[in-house]
Image 1: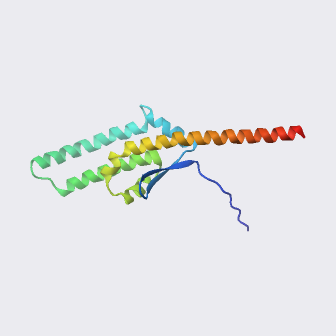
Image 2: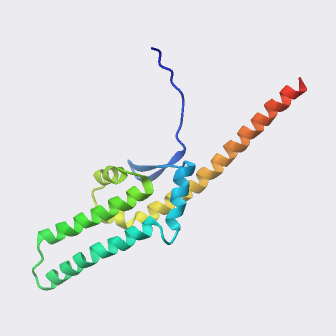
Length: 157
């Protein structure tokens, strides 16, 4: 059996976070529509934010109380870090897709970094999406012109 290869390129762009750490954002119409719905008030992102607050608030209160009483235990810090990692995972996977956070976290093993920079990374993605849309629109216009020119040439024959 002969194998035929097609040169196909996914629609998307890379968001560079730092040297060697990037996120590929697939800019298919379906994914863009999903991303735009993130800004809606009833979106899953808001649900994630509320759940994060509900999860972290009691843990932080417990840690602060223990610190004041000089009874802070390593398990308390581990519990807080684990909760933060789960929140960061949900956030990044909601925006960029399943499995992305594990890859990112393996390269920069600092949950604080990922949580503190999530908004900037998300905004960079939106800027990339805007630029990608302009390129895609030019490609579509060029394809339309090419099609119209071919059709006009056939008519002239």
